[in-house]
Amino acid sequence: MKYFIVLLTMVTLMSATCSKPTCLPVTVDTSANKAQFLGKWYEIASIPQFFNIGCQCTTAEYLDNGSNIIVKNSCRLGGALIGIPNNITGTATVPDPNVFAKIKVRFPVSPVDADYWILDFGPNGDYMLVGDPDKNTLFILSRTASLNQGTYNNLVNKAKGMCFDTSKLKRTEQGTCTGV
Image (cartoon, rainbow, N blue to C red; front, side, top):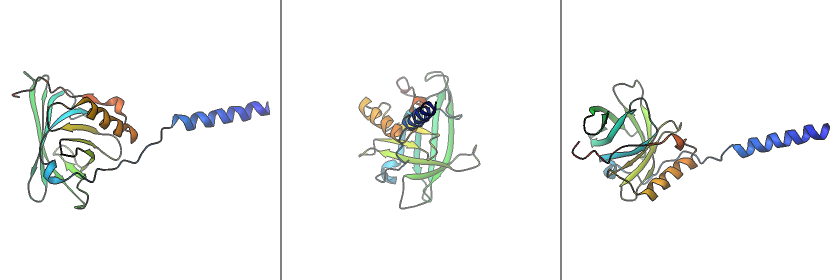
């Protein structure tokens, strides 16, 4: 009986240890910079949030306003061709000028600033992976309406390594959005 209890304890401890993934810390890409960040981005995938459920043709545009960045998010609810436009404008700030990748964003519907961390930034500013340190939000954005599958997989794997729940990622319809 004594050996059974010891064995049961060992199996329990081993399974607990094996079931917990080793997570890398949530870190930002220090190569992200304002000049390459500004402009229009297409959402390729995201973990759905209350504000983007049902959205297609989702884009974000970042405009320099001197002291902060104007954020213009747009999508179509209900389909690309006949969907209802859904737009919101907010502001972004960079609390630490030495770390551009740790951005704070505020929209009129939110009483607090949200963390908007750039976790991976394409070498030419052509894609980025954005999330928050609590791992509740995750966005894959591209300068074009589509993203190479290999790059997409690399970004998903980077997020997985930081223990974001990538099983919740949903692809954003962009294929039928021309002229929208």
